[in-house]
Length: 134
Ligand code: HEM
Image (cartoon, rainbow, N blue to C red):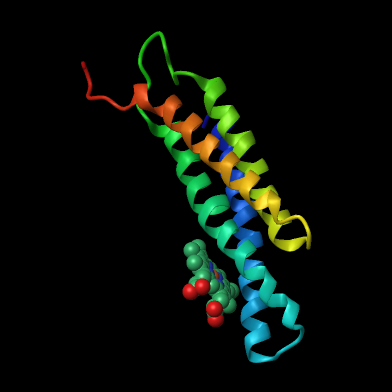
């Protein structure tokens, strides 16, 4: 497995652990109310499981498994590393923007970084998506 896939999939697993922990805390809090502020974990839960886990796992597997072509191998690897770094920075910015009062502006910054990451990954993957011999 290429090094970038290792990083992407390990980071995705960390987000899975975080997302499930946030979900478990909210679920517990529904049955046995501990602290109303735990509901503020909902946007962090959604961010972790949908972007941090699902999207990042797909990127990690895609980087590994998409066809390689002689001469170019895995294409523009720099763009794919950029996507990894920017995606995780974006998720952390969205966490902080949702959690820390007065930092809501970071949510828009985080979402923009996530869009940049998606664009960078797509630009990396596009030339690798073609039929054999094409
Ligand atoms: C990959 C797996 C998961 C995904 C994609 C996911 C996604 C979501 C989404 C989108 C919501 C918002 C629903 C809404 O507002 O209508 C939500 C809410 C919630 N999730 Fe998850 N979730 C996952 C796993 C879990 C797990 C494992 C737990 C518990 C251990 C959990 C506990 C909760 C709770 C308690 C809520 C709030 C429900 C409410 O509004 O009453 N989730 N989840």
